[in-house]
Image (cartoon, rainbow, N blue to C red; front, side, top):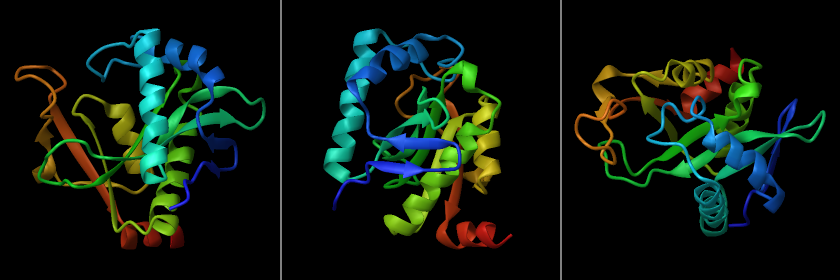
Length: 189
């Protein structure tokens, strides 16, 4: 499949990663507030390695986490996109939708706008039947985005993240899902 390297929404360009994204991306990943629902902040080297893995996902699967750029000024603001769940869980194999934005871009609806665009790509262009999203139980901001794009949580689906050690405060996770039919209904609403 030809990689999907670019998507657009009203205010955002979702594009392939560029080398000049690294300074802003590394600053975002080093921000303790941005990373508070992740196990740790990332160094510049770890951020560069993550960009490499994100590029590799596109090369291998044709989709991934797109770099987010504001159309009005071309500023890098974070990422949003789709990825294959890389651990075993009751809901895997699955494709996950995820996002992370620099703190100064919170509260403008960018995450929901980009996530809605990524859902459309997943269902229309990739032909997926279901997309999941998950986060720590304490991450209310991401759960609000999941709800805003029509995803639903069944408490019976919640799980302990297998990549985190027992007792870690982020180990308890919620799982949200949306299937193609639910997504089509939200389009018609």
